[in-house]
Image 1 (cartoon, rainbow, N blue to C red):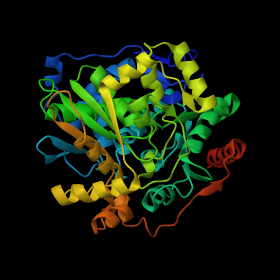
Image 2: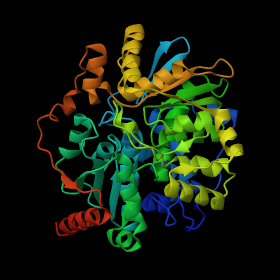
Image 3: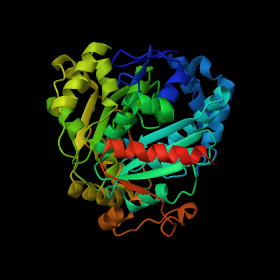
Length: 468
């Protein structure tokens, strides 16, 4: 399997090359040259497999010759061994046609563990085979950072620097990053928004000399391996609901579009998915796009669901590439227009393709709080603000035909105890393995919203580590 940039000006790579490169040199995102499709019989053969085995089987066509199936199976088994539920991604029924798939049973209590625990294993394997080291840089709106740090801490071939927007994550999210005591981990609190942090990461990659000196790679969902590692849990959910002999719909709370893009990829591989339902908060650019082809970025507004406080959804570029029939010239021009003007003039034909499959719902903070309360009052289920938005989107879905709706529960409610308690009167407690969070010493460095300043900090961090 080879991969090409959505903007057409980067050297094609195999899976290992894409894993280590992260972002393409032309600023685009890597996509597989073709989509591996499975027959109904092949989907059925995956039923009842343990999750690690299922993940290896679903991912291997994307990995190709880089890693054998047997080795990939072992990496998956190690990645998911520490999850605290035997099913890894258990399903909970809320109503006759509404289910929740819980993706928060990993070490940092968020769905990002599903991909990043495996990425840590993949990086270690590929870097050891190539006798190389890398510096991972990432931006986080709350959950990616802690999951990436947990997956990469204390690994001798990896240094990891994570940028987060100061004051715009929950306290639990921040402390999951900053209380980690590992010499190869560097936390940077940026005076700005998540979009500012994400732009800064792209700026670091765009600085060719810095990228080469630091041997940069990415763990954000700009890295294709992140998307590939998220596809299996959609497969697991659909098979549990009767696929391929029955259609399903997915409701996904999303900000950066990576999670729902993995669901789209599962459908592209032949899984019978009738609708993809996007849940947004007050930062509703994706919902506005689906409702009226209004892809216009506005200022990022803080909300009860901070992981979705995003206006520039990086992974939308991958869907856009597909909507314009994989034309890299058109994709590059549309993305350049968006960066210059804050508005993307998506062609009408491409927009209509999107609305045939996707629909969206946006909730204000008050509506999010009401959704948390309503879900708990009617079902007894305690949902964090992000998961509640996804469940509410699933409840409001308009489907072309009856199909089970599976909402993604993306974070444990204890990650957002204040919001959950305000809505329900119940304060969720952290699991025992995270009890130290609220008393542990924090380690972070504050930085202005300035690329040169952040580059200097990362250079110094890498230099210190190289001397250890």
